[in-house]
Length: 294
Image (cartoon, rainbow, N blue to C red; front, side, top):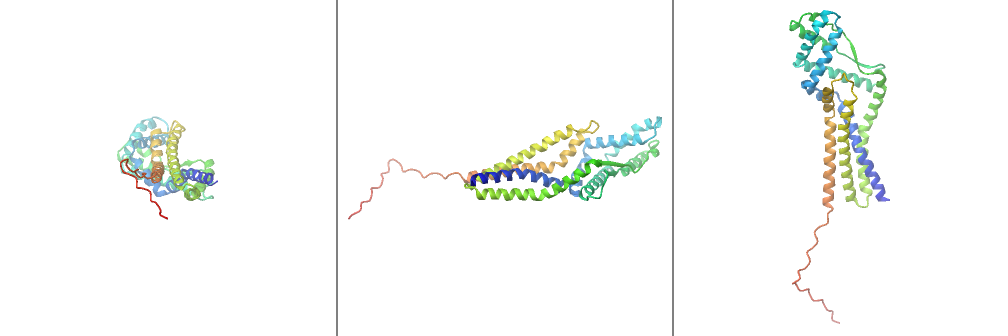
């Protein structure tokens, strides 16, 4: 009974360890505005991200123009200007402000049940205004005709806000309780085991297996996420964003793997039997047995 109970507790603890790491990453990594903005900031220098932003903003600006020869003549200038703009310090500032606005809007929607009833939207007019200023400074013809309107862009559809809010509240609670439960269950499983050193070794191996499965899940999630994207989404840029967001989770998975293997190896090494004492040599006579005198 002790062995079965110990095995069940240790197995449950090893199962909760990667789940707790995933919940903590989502609650304390993605949901923290400072960490999120710091994580996304280097992507402003990524060529794939810059190209994706330039294509999206350039196409959006051209669609806002009136149809006709003026629009078709201005299109190439607009796209070239946007690509040039993505290599400036102003773009890095706009990238940071845009990510900050999106993150604040999403957090406000998921944290307050009554804050957002419809879709989560952000206003990208400041980015369009910066592009217009750049075109005017470069003396591009018809740059003054580029409209700068306060267009609300939906980043989360209205039908997904409720589910996202519930998921956030679950992850917020799980980020604290799952790691704590994993530690308590592992300690209890080792304490009730008849052979505690063997139980400690099993806990280390289970933790390492959980870390390996978490790393595999991150890699598989990347593949599935990019495969499910629409054709109009720039896949290399989406891959760069995914890698940046999951970098901390990948690090935690490898830490779990290394920690589990270290604990298992240390426990196994400590449990090895010591060297047996060397037997007496053949040439050495055995001492005579002692005789008792009555």
